[in-house]
Length: 57
Length: 435
Image (cartoon, rainbow over all chains, first blue to last red; front, side):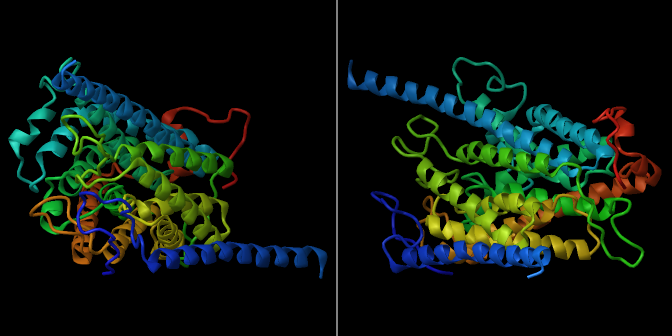
């Protein structure tokens, strides 16, 4: 289990999200960016295949 | 005005705001039902459309009185397991002072309303998976069992500050990945095993046919309505601040009493919707699954919506968008005909949602003294309980109905169309099913 809590008590806490204030948040930010590219690649590949099928290229 | 008078006036104003908040959250939640209605009718063939719609609307209608009769009482009284806490349940006794118009109680009606709509959601989840062959009376009994008994038990155990799964294991399920979605998904699985597939779903060699619904645009629009309704659902999972019923004078709290904000839910719900859609699209490029991906995403992230980093909420939801369709393929190969993928979207993604909290959310302070912090084992054991609590009643009661011959419509009726049983025609201009 990954210890991702930025707080030890709820009293006075501010940013409580997982990995707040650590490199973990940036890590997941960049993973998110990479994941957004996956469907672009998938669509390009599928559309190219359809183009090829219909244009005979 | 004295400080005491000012305090009393503020608390009173907050109570009225609480009432307004849950009243409108309940209204927004009805959109989940409108969405499921469109979703199921669109996923049905022309000859079954109105039977699917009627079934869905009746589930909604039956859930309301049965939740009044015993559902709310079960939620309040059963926090210890199967032995009722009569004192805690007193506020839910249907003939009690709290269960009707009462000028000294602005809260019970709106809390009851919100929980009733949660119950309607559980019944709707099951309803889509069994379309085109389940018989109406059996479906209604199963829906009432799920929405007004089984779900209430799971919520009392794992979605209540005094629930035994919370106080014993530190079970954390803020947005109901387990207590609503797993319960409904695996209840549906239990029913589907006894109900069997639609006529024409499987070939003699065991291979499956894809049965297309009559209107994918209707299904896709329904799914978007469900997403809107989820904002009411997830907003109603929070406790309003500043009243005598609140956890805090100044801050929102989750159902366990840990502080959170509506902003947290907004960040993470939107990111989860997007992550699920994009994940499912990348996996399938199928418009039906892409929209179901929104549900896969929200359900996967739901248990931890109060605490996720939004980027991680997106990633967890993206994984849910992969897991949902994969699970549906496996179930189809196993001979389970789940017409809309409800077992996978709600059940399997619900498992992932609970375990994701167990994997990523170590170290958070517990909600109160004597309550354990979140652990992987706590979430894992909670997942097992949710699976069994959903699956066993669905399987056993549908098995009995099957033996009595009242569960499944006969082949000739299925072939003629279930709309024959509701004596109505969805599209009088002779639009017909092609198979």
